[in-house]
Length: 347
Image (cartoon, rainbow, N blue to C red):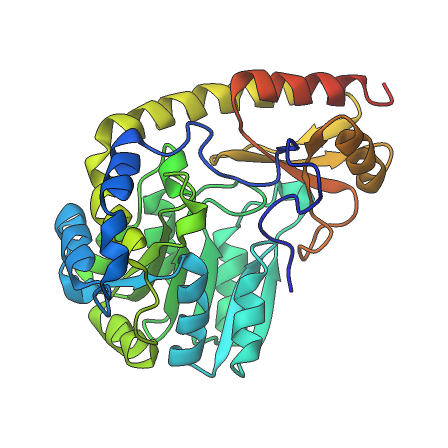
């Protein structure tokens, strides 16, 4: 099993920079709705979550036929692989490693387009187009903003790549971290339905609800219909459905989060850039990828944990090695504590 879910040790007070969850915490409005909805647990929830689907569709101005709910975004990765394959899939790497695990589990042939450090792990459209032309995949997987590199691409950039690819290709666009960025979703590609597109969205990261396991996908109707035909009933619990109907009512929370993450991301990036023992890469999400120029990440992790902090080592991502690590944006004082440690570690 891949490494997810953050620090798993015995220290309950560990300051965990490995999990990319909104540091502002659960929105108060959703907290109140969840507490008030506790009695809903004595009832069976809607089998597919039709009420939440309708609410999200209304919020996004798409049809309910374009929406599918998942037990976290992770369920929808596996459901896509199970229902749409097998075939050949191209994954733009380094990226979230559950795509490959899901695809191989359901018999897909997986090929890779590996981005390199010298290019700051940024896609060259011509290079990717050449790989797609040569490999002829049925599906292309692209995470935007990408985990773990933080690289984010504009809607125009994504549109251009899709328009210059074969219309027979299905594009799986993971936008689980898009709400943290200054870019906008590629949702219009689904509304136009000119290409076969499925966009993955997570509600647990931006709204600080990982324990509820709630996410959704927006796709052209044929993809959603196919996925629903393979979906088990009742994968979303009653509290998850309550949260799903409320998240887009939290406009002030969303604005506050974007403002905080934007400012703190810039501050953390500037501070990391001054540390001579590491390199930090530009990010459009709520985390930064870094590479140690001296020492090992294993040694750094051991030293950090002794000081009550933890990070995400990245040796299990294709194209990265034991010198890379990822850190999330937390509260300002917590970020400063980590920055001070990194500045002084073996300086």
